[in-house]
Image (cartoon, rainbow, N blue to C red; front, side, top):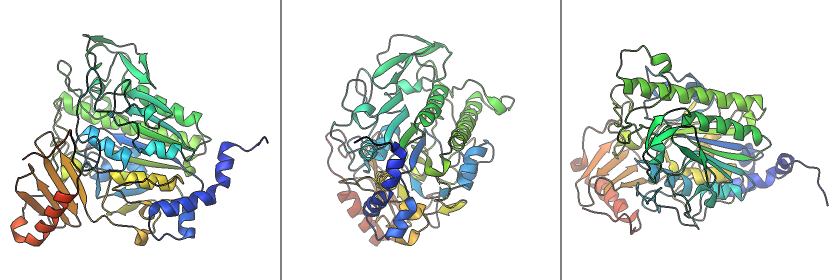
Length: 477
């Protein structure tokens, strides 16, 4: 039998079924009417900035760098104050986002290089966010930086649930903003740039600069949205700014122009940092404008966040713009400045405008959350909790984390736990536990471990039991 229904109309008819799945995916006591607030499967856009600090946006206290479009995004949606990245560096943070697991359980727990190009690949049978949504009828795309598997591996985006991919497979390749090529799916697409040297990881020094990769990816995102306007689609826009270009011979904050900061009496690296963020802000405005022009704004939920805290690379100085705000630490630290990140969620008519949440959440919450929004079957195994009750203003139904856990292996084996008001950090598996009361000491300046042995004992138990062993990342003293 031939049907004249469009894909979108068919999925609207399935809305009640999606709501039922949503209610199951949240794993809490949402009623049918509460779950029905989700409605038909929305389009989902997840924007992940690279090394953007908690204090780099106006809506999070930034005074100098101009971010009017992202600030408007927050004014039209919900701003989270206590949201955390999956880790304090790229690959494990992105793995946590894609798999719904924290770094005590993820397969990728560090930036482990695989030669000639790429990082440790996800195994073929990994349960991922795009795979989950694809099975629910979503068209899935990654535009930007991947970092979870190089060419011809089991970890490429097309092997992990993405229908379409455009950008960088390898994080090191992504250090070059004027690369010789990008990937479209599994094929290399040559650009008009010239790169010195013959490095197999694609991260050679750009000597002739024509195609700025970030601009190409921003344009590709707009094209994908337009071509898939009938939906439902999932766009993971993993942009590459404001990460430094920190390969030898090309260090800096590389951007085609300094824009409104060109005449500032600042070091070039700080002009570049600010210009990158404002360039990103410009394109967030273009993206929301595209949704409005296509008439799909009301049925598209947009998330905006960052993969970890601000960096001190390529001449960047986090203190210059107060990029970590009131927080201690930066990228590669497990203090708040390394892992607490902005999170904005916007969905006109569903997420109340101008709202704020201090619900404690993390990257591993997104797999169950987006599965619920998309009417998809929830993950078999996750460390996350569904955030839909918070998003839809039924927070009294919101499940809370008992604790959040991180581990980081590039400086020994460091661990951290957030448990309610308490934050614990340990450097080395046998190191002394530091304890901070975030309710009174957000900057983690006063170690109160000796004053609260009961809290320390509870956290020590979490540290001992929150992880599984890993052949690549054993705990070291």
